[in-house]
Length: 326
Image (cartoon, rainbow, N blue to C red; front, side):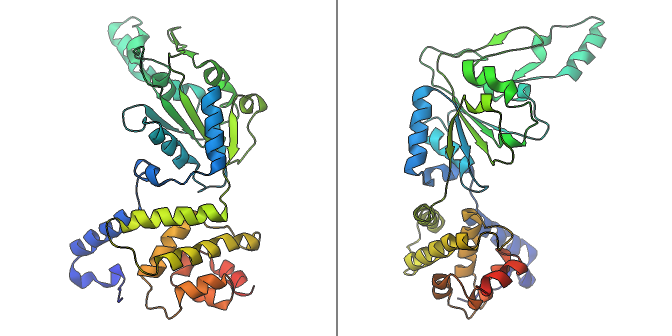
């Protein structure tokens, strides 16, 4: 298959190039909601989920970046039928996050401005709005048969040191008090399902850990194969499977899993998502490479690896020197 770089085809017109570029991007990328259905959950993860649901405790997922921690929360919400009906809430933790930020927001600037206009202090309740935990804890009230909410607290290890400890009451008793008005929110009739992720960049406080069911996501070789197969199926869509698809996935899975043996010899191991994108690029857009992709991947090592199509997008030049010399 003859494939040319998009940037080399400007004669086709910039609009045509950008349209094709978007079509390619749409095949490679999907939202977490869209990808939740093809998520591959290990038996160990399913067991941890069952324990967390049974005990009503938050599920803390740890693991390397790209191991599927965030997507696991979307998968769980979809499995419970809570992903697309307003019962799923995602909070992305930042380096300046405070515990209050995940519960509610107080627009102090607007409140102060209105007080100045009225020349007296106005009621603060009109300047409060719920955030993820506030909604999940019943800020707006709920019916007797209401469904529980799912809250994802993503990458909690990015937060300041006090953030986890400031959430102990909320995670244990599922309630909090609004400092500005004294109103208590929660506990709700249906205990929320809370999923927390951490890249383990720093150790979380013991009192926080004691309130969670913890599971470390480990990407095993057999899981890698299942992930690659699921992504290939989603990528192909309604198109018929290529005759070499199974060989490509088997060889690719063996190659990615074999990289563990080189730990410490390269800058970092690519995530499964990065590897998947490269695998498709290398197979469908080979850049006129003469290297047999499948056979070279089966070898896992050797000087030929440095000649793989677009391999520089997966590894640094220094990494390639290490790999090809082993």
